[in-house]
Image (spheres, rainbow, N blue to C red):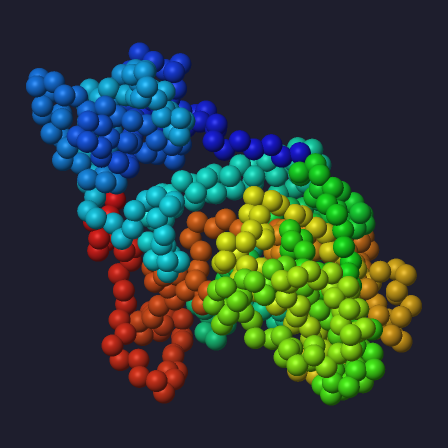
Length: 553
């Protein structure tokens, strides 16, 4: 079981450092101690004190008011926000009634005895405070400033501790071997596009691996039967909230194991068994294979309420193979959309005339099946089940976002709903040719033993031994059992915390990258660029890092 406590982790944080303590660790037990602190100026208040910040928290520094220390006072008054400073002083208890319960150091303050300004700072593009709203583009452009925020500091330090605990759990308790695999590999088509890397050999290229798939399977063959790695993976595709062009995954491979064993191993990291749901249940109830189970609004099959209907488009839909009528009920949906901006409501609902054409019996049946109350809003869609369910699945999430924009609590951000999704189909129809099939996960996935006899007769009904770990509607892990001997399994966990992420277009807005390379540099790799017809004149390399052009500290 992993146990983490980031806020209290200050042991050794000042070793080999000019400081004696971190700002956030000071408390009443340090009263009368001489301390040396280093950090950034967070606030300047009333010419009486400043607030110094580092990763651990805030501490109040009292500015001396004695005439004999006027030079030190003037030095403090000349500080600008975010200037980096070293302060030496003595810890004392705050005067009675001046304690600040909102600060972990609110019982004490430091009486400054000396100040050394390590670096001054001009006005920043935004304040380093979590409550200050910043656009994502601005945060990405000045990521090195955004990382100063308490939230980002917490995230990265939490990630570091999680990685350490995972290593201890896998290596010390379960005998795994941490093996590094190459970053430069050959092209292996399939899945996402790969990043191509030129080499010094004319006409030859490396590729950055999408995952260590081939290497870890070879390690199983080589007898390294319990492998893991914090693997860097590269995929040349547009970013999603849970994806990046480059990311880290905890990559696990085990020989001589079944699906239950892998699930038990991962659940042991947290010591809480996760509920399971089949792929069929997820698509039926939520319209997606990675459902957010923090809220309701489940899909309901209301086909029977429309039997014998004279509504043409519904009649046509029910005549198609797997034709059905699906619905979701949005609590207080009509109240919210009428009181707010109705244009925000997704425009995918059936026209109200369809409801008016139903008989009274059908209306009552529809309301009962959807479990609708006064003021609720019902969306329905008609068509093949494989199209209708995903459509309402997307609409369900859009409705949740819409209700939250009106101040209705729908998805509690403090709640974590883990879920295993199992029994995925082994094959799915190709998007460009539905008559043809492709591997739903990858070609190495083994079929469920009970379905193996259907492989050559009814392949669409074959379930694969593929499973995903879902958290609040995001796929955070996935794996499969492979049909090799010894059979083995893999689990990939994508980390949500990235220090320097890419934009949704896969660009680094800070550097910026990708960027142009000079013709002289291209000649070294025997590469020439064929430009599109669009005029590129005016493009020029941009200096990096941006701090070379700005006096930000």
